[in-house]
Every structure is written in C-alpha cells, then in structure tokens.
Length: 412
Image (cartoon, rainbow, N blue to C red; front, top):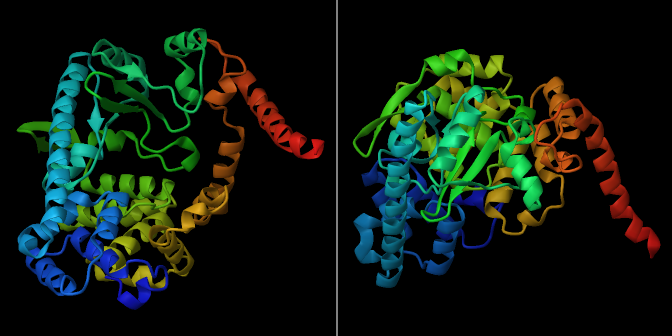
C-alpha cells in the first residue's frame, strides 16, 4: 500500500483520515487490518472528514466493517451513524437482489438470456456479502436482438423509461418509446428504467462498454462461459471472474477512476478468486489492445489497497513507463479536492492517453465526433428512420452549437 509520504504529494487535507479509509477498504486479512487500525486510531481523527471521504468514495460499508471489531474505540455517535448507513445499504441490497431474481425469471419466460453484472452479483462473488458493496441499481445485459422484448417486460412490470441527456415533448417521447431503432443512438448502450413506486432503477444493457471505447466483450465465447452465483438463496447467471475483471477495468477507465469503490471492486475480485487465469487475462488484454488499461487498474489496486499480484505481472507493471504519468493523474483526482474543477476535455484526454495504439485513439475520436446520438435524433425525431441522414445532421448540429457559443461573445 502507499506510504504516507506518497499520499502527501497529492493531498495535505485529512491525510490520517484518508489512510484509515484506505485501510478499511483493503481486502487484507481482518486481523492485520484491525491491528493497523488500532495504531491509526491512537492519533487524533477528524471524524466528519472521515465520514465524508467514505461517502464520497462509496466505501461506507467497508469502513463500518473495518471499525466493527474496534467499536469501543469509535465515538458512539460516529459508530451509530456508520451502523445506520450500513443497515440502510443492506436493506437496499436485499430489495435490489429480490427484484433482480424476479426480473431474471420474467426474462426467462420470454426466452431472454439476462446476465446481471456489477451490483449484487459482484457483491456476492467478490466481497462474499452484498451488503459490503454500495450499489443503487440493477445492471442487466441482454443480446441486442432481445432489446424490444426485454423493454416490454420492464414496461409491463410498471417501469418507465428514463430518457437521459435530452428533453422531449409528449409527441417526441411517444416516438422515442415506440422506435425499434433509437437504441443505435444511445451512446452508453443502455436504457435506464425507473420504477416510481418501488424507487428502483434498472439499466438494460446491450453492450457492457460503449462502442466508441473499442473494448467489445460480448463475443459468442463470452456468452458460452457464463457461470452462476448464489444470491438470496437463488442461483443466478454471472460473468466469469476473468471477464468481470475486464468489465471493472473498462468501467473504471471510462469513469476516470473517480471513486475508490471502483478500485476496491478489482482488489476484492482478485482476492476472492486466487484461481484467476492470468495467462488468459494477459492474452485477452494483448488481443484487445487494452494492456495499458488493465495495467493501470491493477497498479491502482496493488498500490492503494495492497492486493498481491503474480510476480511476473507486478514486474511488468513496474517497467511500464506509461503508468508513471497515468497513476499520479488518478491519485490527484482521487485525493485532491480541487482537481474536480479541471476544464472540459480532461476526461477525453485521459481516455486517449490510456489507449496504447494510435488506431484506437483515432477510432475513439472519430466515433465520438461522427456517430449520431439522441441529441442528433431530436433534429429529426422519427419513430422509424434510416440512420444515414443523421450522420449528416450530427456535424450540422455540432457546428451550429459552436457558432451559438461564439455569437454572444462577438455581440459584446
């Protein structure tokens, strides 16, 4: 794990509290963790900052679990708050787990193969307890051909589609919901559904990663290597640990590793699956040209949360020159409260830097610049349509937006 002197390079605010949160979030043996925390708690702790860090990084259940053997050393009000947060998270986890099982059964009746990922399945397979992981929705992967059938199942269960990024009139919304092709314009390859009464969110995915990321995972081999995990006494399908690792690396990269929970997911997955096929993982990373992405995710889990990696992989990470700039960038945005104020374009630059091949950088840029989105569909909102006209409407919309940004400045 990182030494205090290294952390000091990225933050001078609440360093002791940050070290405690990192220790609680580590999958190291409980006895070792407890001894470390005992020593840390001998120093003065600013508890509001610690709670804020745990909440910001979505690791409050892990902090509670880390403190539980030492609760007599924690101020009563602080421990009560952590206990309350843990109970609320546990109830939410049970509710989402029950709804997941119900939806999978409904999908099966319609001949739809639904594969949950992240959420409850990751809590069960990586953490060994859904309550130790904070999650607020259900992520379900289906085959692209089953989108309409799956959408119908969710609508019949009282869910409503949550249309993101654009505001629609009633007429436009009717066309959006009726369209069988609009999913081509949904950049993140997922429809969010909201159940107003149950206050649940289900994300219906037809791709784990968006196409512009050039990181496809859903091959036929992928569908043929599904496993199962037990949730609330029921066997549900899940991804293999090796595939799950790539899912976590992909989503962590897409979100620029903005929360410690993303890194904890990787650490706990590796810790709970000592049988991981590292040769297969390295070969897949090489074939998909995501070795740098994988290396960054593993380096973060190793340095921040003390996860042990095979010696040959650790040596490879230590030799990788690209990580010498990428890792500090991630640490800065994780630990420096001011770093979030970076100007627009920071995320895109990071996404480009983490790709090791020029062709993938070019594809990323071209896909973002040319592939129509729902905002482009709004220029010509049809329920049924050929897609090619929107490839002309997109540059028109982008140019128009830039002109509108400049015109007010010129008028002054």
